[in-house]
Length: 199
Image (cartoon, rainbow, N blue to C red):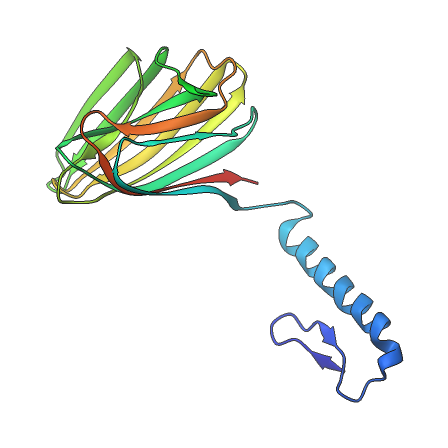
């Protein structure tokens, strides 16, 4: 009996009878099912891509479809038309929520110097600095654990100054929020943003 290279799943031999094809398919399907259950513990695991945006001189992105009780990861690589910073807001359908943000950041540069800032309360989450002519990477995990609370923690690499920004924050008034917006505090954005949902 032939088997697959990595998992040893049984597959039909070239000499097997056509009339045994249904049984061979059931055996292979059962092997796959057993292996996947063993790997995942019977759960749908990992990150699932929800949306990808390619930006060119863009005012930002808006995404809806987030659900209460879910967690998301937002990643991107951004440059700006003018030196400024990127921000994130939760969104209620077609309207950004501009109240009740509480956040704190820590900046660490290549020399090891540390500086911090906070917004309590603020109109948005601060993600990090963006610059004309250089791209910066960011990754943020978002959670909507309840209909009244949203949370965010993330990292941002400022390639212009060689600075890492760590940020954490929350919003205490998430009623009816189902999405996010990411945009520059001035000018436009170029680059890409992807949104994933944790399974």
